[in-house]
Length: 262
Image 1 (cartoon, one colour):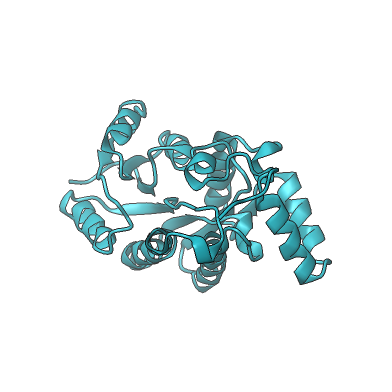
Image 2 (cartoon, rainbow, N blue to C red):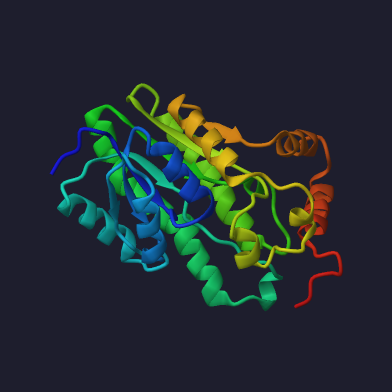
């Protein structure tokens, strides 16, 4: 089975930025949509005409899931031209009081699955001399994040990994782009426990605008795109502040107005 249109695989496509990236790509790509919630994926697929959509539900916290997803794509006769590693989640709270199993699942989704999927699909792109990888990192990845220590660390990995791979791909016809948004209107705030923190009580970005910025940057072959002028300004100012002060400011931003318990 082959497609006249290039094929984009989007993880975490059932909601938020991933769903909007799928919408942005649907005009000129067929899509492989994956996430845990099959019903939401199928509803999205039905709404993305003229794109042909292939739905492969998967829980990327399962160590076997990336390889199983790659095998399912191959069995369907599909060649992935664009890989969007969007799936990820966070969890607010002090590390010592956290659910360790949940944090390890976070590392598997945010880091291990992203790395494995890139490793599974990127060599074929390089061999064909064309392709694009879009990894969703975060402004969280540019500094440590007290009260979300593991999440910030996973996004530091995504940011760094993507920029390094982008450099390695120079001259191959394949590009890697890191999309680094700040607080965005999506399910993330509620699911992570961030709703009500200072990070989400101020202005938040629109998921569609963030997704479209990421897709534009990917199409242009940019290595990194930080969305939102406030985020870019904060990162710029942070370069000139003592590291300890930056960490304390991040902790304050992560806190609820009444304080974080636990």
